[in-house]
Amino acid sequence: MGDFIVHENATPLPTIHVISDSVGLTAQAVARAAAAQFGVTNPIIEVLPKARTFEEIEAFIDEHSAFHRQRTGDGRILVFYTLVDAGLSRRLAEYAASRDDVVAVDLMTSAVGAIARMTGLAPSTTPGSVHVADQYYFRRIEAIEFTIAHDDGRNPQEIAQADIVLLGVSRSSKTPTSIYLSQQGYKVANIPLDPSTEPPKEIFDVERTRLFGLMTTAEVLVSIRQRRLGRAGGVASRYADPEFVYQDLEKARALMRKLGCIVIHTENRAVEETAQEILRYYERVHPPSADMMG
Image (tube, rainbow, N blue to C red):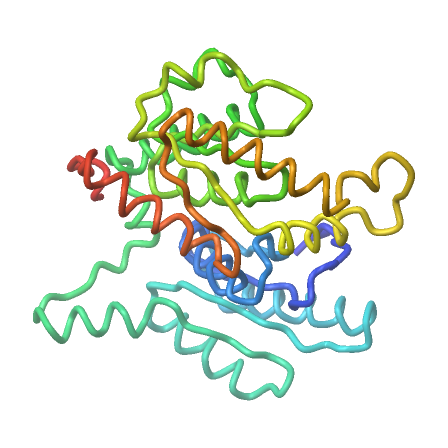
């Protein structure tokens, strides 16, 4: 199997192990969505892609279980798998059931079976069918690349090319929301706001229906920033000072009103919920095209 990357798991969740006979993007997306319900937007994921034999799968599980047992004393392993080969999927399910230290979740069989029963159609057994090189797939890749290149105020001269532009103070969930939207095929730019600097002038050229301000309460933001700072002190402590945070939010609100952008509150919301609220407004004015629908 070879070496795998050693992660320092700073999250309260276990490592999620993805097994796929394709590249594993579907299972990874589900894993991230599930982890977000526990407040973790970037879970640790180990992937076995393009699995073709049960021996490969068994070795992957055994190796990772042994690694966790040696490292933490707990050899339990969480597996999400998407296998279109019914025989391979069945063998993995039986193997997981025979072990007390493996929790395995089949993300494919039930969904495919339900469609087959409703339609009477026979499913394809070709791995990776969901990633056929169609317009939707290429649009998603392009959107993700654009969003990464325009994260945290980078390349402001190009923000007019974005489908959606997010504004917000530090730690208001701009980046995770941007990445989530990009995975749905939307090009997103996000602009950080703070009292000491002016936003890029290009933001005033963006169509108002594409502008969204992310807002939270001062209490929530202070708590998030305090956790972010940890034991850091000195000048940095001003970053989480309640009075500074209040001023930060007030200046952001003033700019959002001036721009006429739609304000979305992010407190007590998962990233997915914030993104869906944004899309509810956005798609009223900009209905998704056929290539966005997949």
